[in-house]
Image (cartoon, rainbow, N blue to C red; front, top):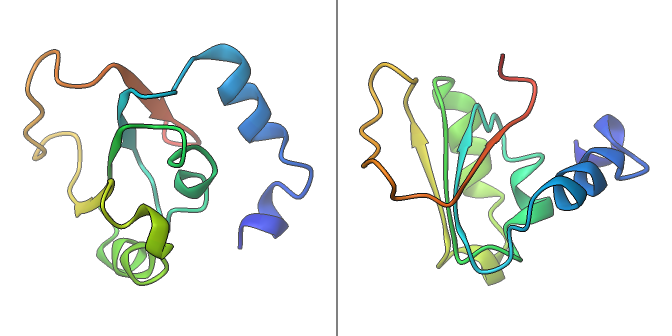
Length: 98
């Protein structure tokens, strides 16, 4: 799915140009099936990615590359139900979520 949505990688370049993700704990709001998560997760220390769509989260979990399984966590949740500790994340990513 990634190739069909952003075949030139423009969205990924913009994220990396705007914020330094390297070594940071990242929270991704509205991650869907992980289409963008994989494009920045390799640089992050950890990623908590959540979305209210349980089927999309199941797909994201199934498609998690082996190299990222220790640092990416997917949760089925929305902004009203997720419990995020204040200051726990150095970077927040929202893509197509607003």
